[in-house]
Image 1 (cartoon, rainbow, N blue to C red):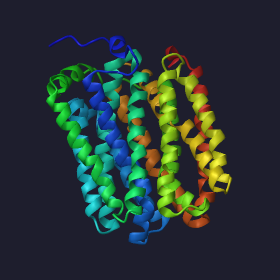
Image 2: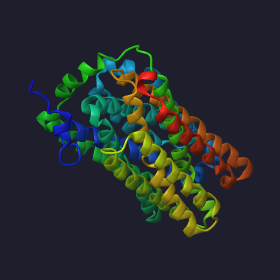
Image 3: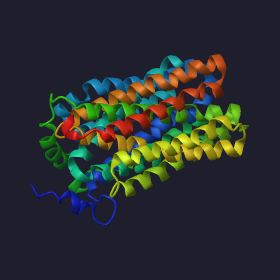
Image 4: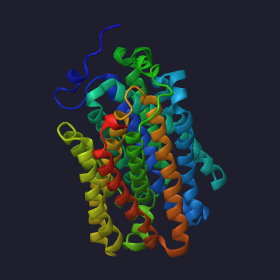
Length: 401
């Protein structure tokens, strides 16, 4: 087997350039689209199925439940099948779940469809994080940030396509066909390149995967794990219910509110681009505190302003801050678990899945009682707690864990 280029060689000149990494970025972007699209389609799905906020929130919870299961078993699956199989198997499963969602006539079928999407998507995500962390070593913060840049870039198209197809009279379902076509093209490109064939990736990944096992994860890791979980909860409260909030409280039409959510995703993309660049020179814990403070500035403006323009401005600032929480937190957590990337990534999926399982559903259930606006109050304390965890973890030396 040809010798792999060293991490610092792959990182020269900006973005990571090797084909396996770029394929991984593309698959993460595909997952991000399908995860994000649930928020913009929810107002339409609620209307079709006559669902309340809590009942609609079952779709988000089912998606997150899949992540919880992968969080428990994902490292074992990756060690058995390999990370490359986890990536592509997860992508195929997402496509199957998306097809079920599009064809299903009621919540009795659309909820299981989102479960399949969440289960397979979490497997894809865990495989990508473990692969990138071990593959790029000291540059893992940059590689993980770049994968999330790709995720944000693809996620931006979700509300745009839903809003555009709905406004054109084609319906929200038509928007879900584009990512499947993109997946087929990515597979054709990836498997046609000799350097990105499964057998090559498997050789690279299994050496790392075989070292993962039962080593205890440190207290520093668990601090970052909790921070990531809170960041995910905050992100998806806004991502899943933001369109409903803008429709109810900011004076936008339903298609307009779905399309306006793009502003949040664009801001996340900008935040992740900045984070990926700053991660080359600034410690992840310092960046985490800074980006969380930006989110804390923007969220009250989005939530409490009551007007269209200030709400959208607050939404943008919130997304700018929230954008880098996940990639920087994951990078810091994996760095706190050297040689145990599969287990560490799987437990992060457990935390993130639990956050998505509980937080949007709790917000939806509260919205049924007090309204969608007051229900958004649960986000602020989650961001405050994440800041505290970032400070605590930053002051904890690796040797002390």
